[in-house]
Length: 313
Ligand code: AMP
Ligand code: MN
Ligand code: MN
Image (cartoon, rainbow, N blue to C red; front, side, top):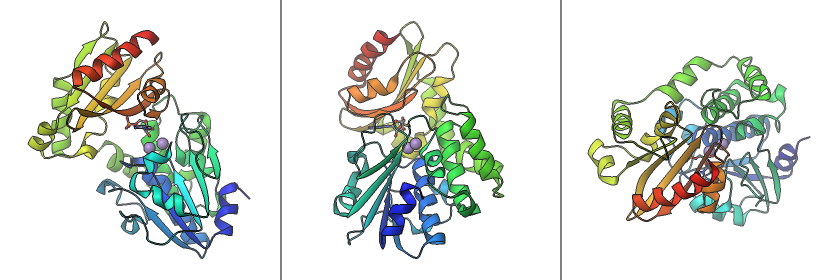
């Protein structure tokens, strides 16, 4: 019995949580556990996340996601892909109220805030960690679709350095469940709306290189988002496009979230540990992909980050 199954077995009511701005790994892992419990156990189960992109609507249980914390305290709270309590956002109350808790994650910066913690920073994704907490024979096609979605999103479809032989082995096992993997990859990862493509083009056009072209950044302001009619979820992928520009070691993408306040995403290729920089500014993440929220003008933000990157180069 894995830690997860033992704790599910002991609980009557369960609440599943992820991080703010839920991404593919967060949504995939949350719905994977949700469907697994629904199929294998007779328990009361709730999945609570901030607004989830429609592109994940093919996942079973998508319609059941609640955008508000539940009223009743649950026996067990399962936190997924969330590196610290603050990133649970408004749903932190569900963790505080629960009798038992387990956190399943892969962030290096996660210090283990739940009662039980299964954290493996060598895993590509929370979905990869989660696979090892489930019984292979009991993983249905619906659960496999959720897990596969999380893995492709956090590995950039098996491109990033977090992809290991183990990741591929698990992805292979999930394929054997009969999932339509090519449609999942195209529809949830590569497909962009016309407006998403336009804002990507604009962000690339306005990007600026610094530190001898080893770094590049771009910024999207509130007024740009209003002009194109896009929200923060439409900006996914911009930083990854910057990272693959020839000669770039470190890519920075930021968008305005308030007056003199920016959400920053960083990606690196070989040298820079961006999780250390993000953690310094109150955020977190992984060695090659991390984020934080910073205040000041965007010149201040770049100046502050630039100092830390230069030290590492
Ligand atoms: P992003 O740049 O938002 O795609 O995030 C890259 C990685 O860093 C993801 O694994 C996030 O979970 C993590 N991350 C982003 N922002 C924060 C933050 N403010 N605090 C902790 N981790 C973060
Ligand atoms: Mn995530
Ligand atoms: Mn993840």
